[in-house]
Image 1 (cartoon, one colour):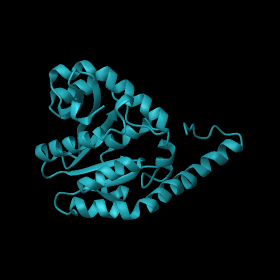
Image 2 (tube, helix red, strand yellow):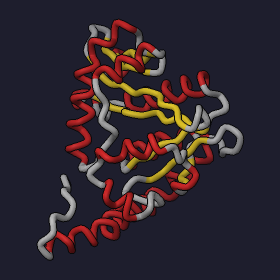
Image 3 (spheres, helix red, strand yellow):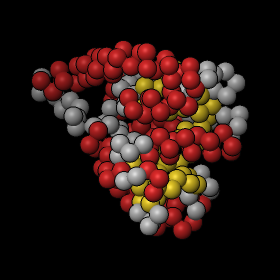
Image 4 (cartoon, helix red, strand yellow):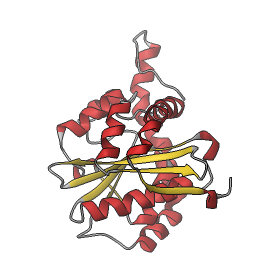
Amino acid sequence: MDNQEIIVRVAISEDKKYATTITDEMASSAAARGTGIAKRSPEYIEKKIDEGKAVIALTKDGTWVGFCYIETWSHGAYVANSGLIVSPDFRKSGVAKKIKQTTFKLSRKLYPEAKIFGLTTGLAVMKINSDLGYEPVTYSELTQDEEFWAGCKSCVNYDILMSKDRKNCMCTAMLYDPKDHYQPEETKAFFEENQSGLERLLRFKQWKFLKPFRRKEKNGGTGLKLFW
């Protein structure tokens, strides 16, 4: 569908009717990718909408297209643009980038001093983040708020995260620091120049981090349940 027919805006109370559709698609998408996200209930999504911390995409006739919301950690020192999801019918249309851009601007407006971060296994999301000025960082540069890391328990790779003492996992950490960051055009150029290297890094992570669990399965253990 023509991207011009899609409206991306801050979600309002009337949009709470899409909450169940959003959480169902989040769960379905995570299972298909073989990664996990912090499980959210429709009530949680409704709360984010009521707080003015959510962005939604709809067609002009009211068809749900996509969604993203804001979470804060470490007493507002860190912000995460979480739960980015797009309906299967509208993927590869460019709407994910527009949703992310809108959520990023909302985060900067609500929390101008906060560091904005994300964890992702997808090159497409990494590129969107790079275009906004995010940089790849180590896990130690993210919030150490226990509640945030507890959200990883629903991920199929949680055992990997804990085996690495929360210092590394399948996801790549990215951070936007308002006090110390490159301009978006610089980080975009970095991503484009190093995309093949990042692809190799993701494949290496899969091979290295999953190897012990595959060995465990081979030796008769339960191993790690994978979806890819």
